[in-house]
Image (cartoon, rainbow, N blue to C red):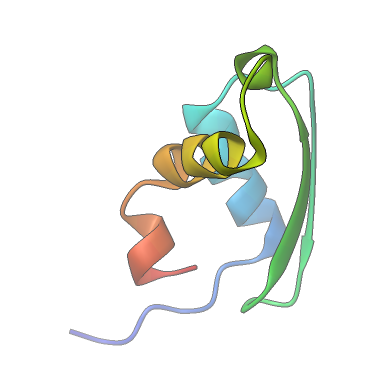
Length: 67
């Protein structure tokens, strides 16, 4: 199986949008490291760790395989 190409910031943003309803979402990155600014009602009352876990859930298997 050929290696997966590094995702773009736009692709990561699309992956998050598919799995997490966001009022605001902006992703920056270089293919290996990404910084996302996310505003979502799903984060209300959640700890920072719980918010990160929810983003990882939205990214699914891509988190382990591509990102």
